[in-house]
Image 1 (cartoon, rainbow, N blue to C red):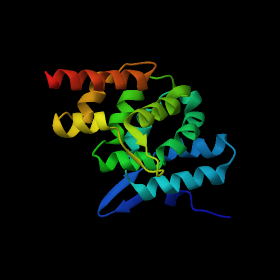
Image 2: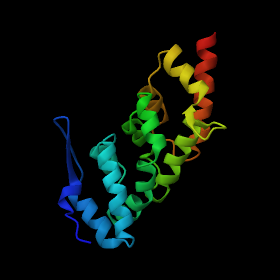
Image 3: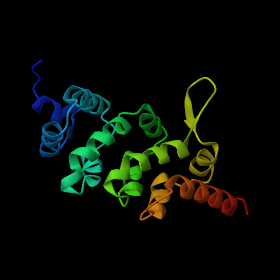
Image 4: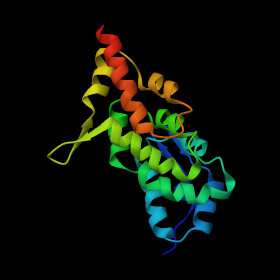
Length: 175
């Protein structure tokens, strides 16, 4: 199957262009197997158009592990939960700013922790925003970007620290 790789890197949607670093993606395809799976993830990522290339690039700072990190990140970046967060005005760039201080081989796990902490799986199989987070965002008018700024530099247990922070904000706002 021949596929124009260049067509994967730029997608124009409603007069906006999303560019993805060709060098990083070339490295991904050159250094990893499962090339077709990776291409499908990239296609999904471009179709969703919800994650800026700069957010992804900010997580790929170690050249020697870029391809491995990107392979681990692609399933997380295309996860439907990331789209759900966007619906609640939580940009992936905020999540990226939280996890970027994590060592590159643990970034995908850290993103999973954030997703597991911010979203709750309901009995019907659908995800919803954590009630505590909903309260903090809507009723207390605290943006997730502000929460992300507080969490920058946390190097482990991001989920636990985020949960604790949400509880603290709720307690503070209740008084």
